[in-house]
Length: 247
Image (cartoon, rainbow, N blue to C red; front, side):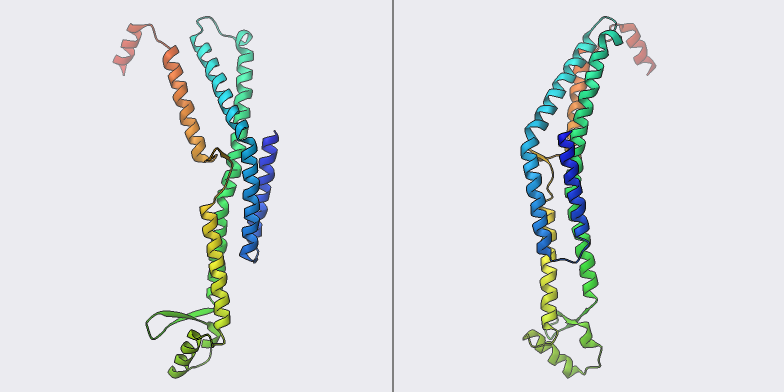
């Protein structure tokens, strides 16, 4: 219950961070907030990693011990002699599922931040690019200019003078262009940082996400089939042969 409460609180923080990305703030503010979130996730992972690992190992060992004894038992099994085993098994499995679900949920929220930041970067870039137009210079390269400079009718010599002035930093739109490029590179660096550092609940380096849960499921299924192959035997060979012949 404590682990679930801690994870749900972090989910709320990530939801607030997603809402913060919808505001037009400095990318440095977003970076500092994400660093704080990463620090909190690192502390949670460090404090609960032994708990999650021991919980998984103890539940797995007890469940397979119960499965081995149940399938190898030759007497009748009813609620009287097997009810306590069934109840304890259900409680253990439910507790493990709740913990893994909480860890995977917060990992998915942390990984979803990069997609939200990419959308924010794309919207900010597209809305800002409408204020600029590009014209080819003498070398054939496209040079952006503020759009308000092209609202008037310029002659070819005036455009060449504007291009030359912008290259030397003397154009009236050069300061705006420099501010635009600086903002663009800041947003791009923030998005690249978020893509390279998704974060999440980790167990000694392994992120508890959907891929990790699929790996656990395949491992548990393999162990179940192994136990059943050692305990469940069909002694009636004629019945088995007739069944194979029917198939």
